[in-house]
Length: 108
Length: 114
Image (tube, rainbow over all chains, first blue to last red; front, side, top):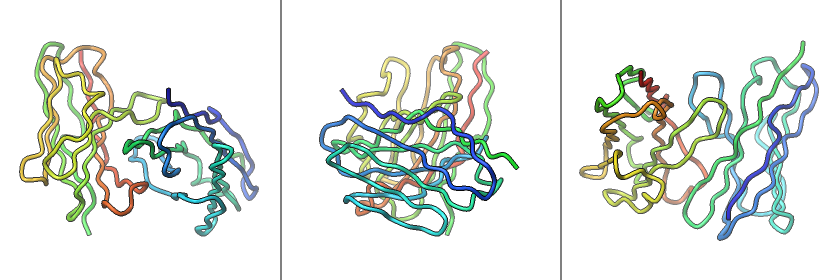
């Protein structure tokens, strides 16, 4: 079967760095994406990794290790507006499957 | 550039009533998705279209749900009859063929079945 695992909640302090991990089991894997969703809002695309390594976009970075079936999202210089849910999503056999999401709480 | 547009944003109906949701994807995006999202959960795929063709509808409960994408642009998702458990947010997304990991979502249609 196919599965994605990510922590349900993470708490960090404003200005700090936080890492949200995602592990997956799937067939026909072709890439890992990350999405941000604020309460009541639409999921918005953050990053996509098809190859191993680190992708950086401003304060956000995403990492993929295909051999370990593992990836993470790294958020730096946390701001209060980063409080949201973060979803990893795998591309697998022409499907895009989402994890259950990680709720990020940021303390002032 | 306009994003993915969905309507209605909110719908409240009684069980056993029909309901329909409409989606207009981003211009030029051939792939269109309907997802269902329950509170505190990730989006779950209902159906995926490549142009007019439904290429993956394996998760669509076909006894009560139907979808169409006429002319390969707009799409509608219908539920008839609605059940209490159908209360959720129905999300439409679209993507370009050459960027399979990057989906653009609409604001969603929040359905409440009483």
